[in-house]
Length: 91
Image (cartoon, rainbow, N blue to C red; front, side):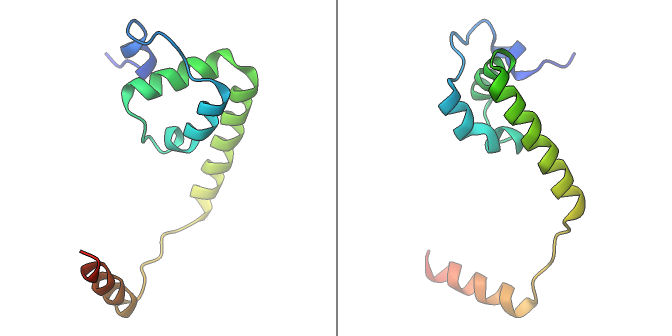
Protein backbone atom coordinates (compact mmCIF):
# COMPACT_ATOMS: atom_id res chain seq x y z
CA UNK A 1 0.00 0.00 0.00
CA UNK A 2 1.25 3.50 -0.87
CA UNK A 3 1.20 6.19 1.81
CA UNK A 4 1.87 9.88 1.34
CA UNK A 5 4.43 11.54 3.58
CA UNK A 6 1.53 13.09 5.49
CA UNK A 7 -0.04 9.71 6.24
CA UNK A 8 3.30 8.26 7.35
CA UNK A 9 3.95 11.08 9.81
CA UNK A 10 0.48 12.32 10.68
CA UNK A 11 0.57 10.81 14.16
CA UNK A 12 4.10 12.04 14.90
CA UNK A 13 3.89 15.47 13.29
CA UNK A 14 2.38 17.90 15.73
CA UNK A 15 2.57 21.02 13.59
CA UNK A 16 2.51 22.10 10.00
CA UNK A 17 4.77 24.70 8.45
CA UNK A 18 3.82 28.34 8.50
CA UNK A 19 3.56 30.30 5.24
CA UNK A 20 7.15 31.59 5.42
CA UNK A 21 8.56 28.07 5.94
CA UNK A 22 6.29 26.77 3.19
CA UNK A 23 7.60 29.31 0.68
CA UNK A 24 11.21 28.52 1.56
CA UNK A 25 10.58 24.78 1.01
CA UNK A 26 8.34 24.87 -2.07
CA UNK A 27 11.13 24.21 -4.61
CA UNK A 28 12.52 21.34 -2.56
CA UNK A 29 9.04 19.82 -2.31
CA UNK A 30 8.43 20.02 -6.05
CA UNK A 31 11.85 18.45 -6.71
CA UNK A 32 11.18 15.65 -4.18
CA UNK A 33 14.06 16.72 -1.96
CA UNK A 34 12.26 17.01 1.40
CA UNK A 35 12.59 14.21 3.93
CA UNK A 36 9.38 12.47 4.98
CA UNK A 37 8.85 14.59 8.10
CA UNK A 38 9.34 17.91 6.29
CA UNK A 39 7.17 16.73 3.38
CA UNK A 40 4.42 15.79 5.85
CA UNK A 41 4.54 19.23 7.48
CA UNK A 42 4.52 20.82 4.01
CA UNK A 43 1.49 18.76 2.89
CA UNK A 44 -0.42 19.52 6.08
CA UNK A 45 0.14 23.24 5.53
CA UNK A 46 -0.85 23.37 1.86
CA UNK A 47 -4.05 21.41 2.53
CA UNK A 48 -5.07 23.94 5.16
CA UNK A 49 -3.85 27.22 3.61
CA UNK A 50 -5.66 28.36 0.48
CA UNK A 51 -3.01 30.91 -0.55
CA UNK A 52 -0.13 28.44 -0.28
CA UNK A 53 -2.17 25.76 -2.00
CA UNK A 54 -2.78 28.08 -4.95
CA UNK A 55 0.89 29.07 -5.06
CA UNK A 56 1.96 25.41 -5.11
CA UNK A 57 -0.50 24.56 -7.90
CA UNK A 58 0.70 27.51 -9.98
CA UNK A 59 4.37 26.67 -9.52
CA UNK A 60 3.77 22.98 -10.29
CA UNK A 61 2.03 23.95 -13.55
CA UNK A 62 4.93 26.22 -14.54
CA UNK A 63 7.47 23.55 -13.65
CA UNK A 64 5.63 20.95 -15.72
CA UNK A 65 5.52 23.24 -18.75
CA UNK A 66 9.19 24.17 -18.45
CA UNK A 67 10.34 20.58 -17.98
CA UNK A 68 8.31 19.58 -21.01
CA UNK A 69 9.97 22.18 -23.24
CA UNK A 70 13.55 22.21 -22.05
CA UNK A 71 16.04 19.59 -23.00
CA UNK A 72 19.30 18.78 -21.30
CA UNK A 73 22.38 19.71 -23.26
CA UNK A 74 25.71 17.99 -22.83
CA UNK A 75 28.55 20.51 -22.77
CA UNK A 76 31.55 19.98 -25.04
CA UNK A 77 34.31 17.73 -23.69
CA UNK A 78 36.66 20.72 -23.38
CA UNK A 79 34.29 22.44 -20.96
CA UNK A 80 33.65 19.22 -19.03
CA UNK A 81 37.40 18.69 -18.63
CA UNK A 82 37.92 22.28 -17.46
CA UNK A 83 35.17 21.94 -14.85
CA UNK A 84 36.60 18.65 -13.56
CA UNK A 85 40.10 20.18 -13.33
CA UNK A 86 38.73 23.09 -11.31
CA UNK A 87 36.87 20.72 -9.03
CA UNK A 88 40.02 18.69 -8.47
CA UNK A 89 41.89 21.89 -7.51
CA UNK A 90 39.29 22.64 -4.82
CA UNK A 91 39.57 19.27 -3.07
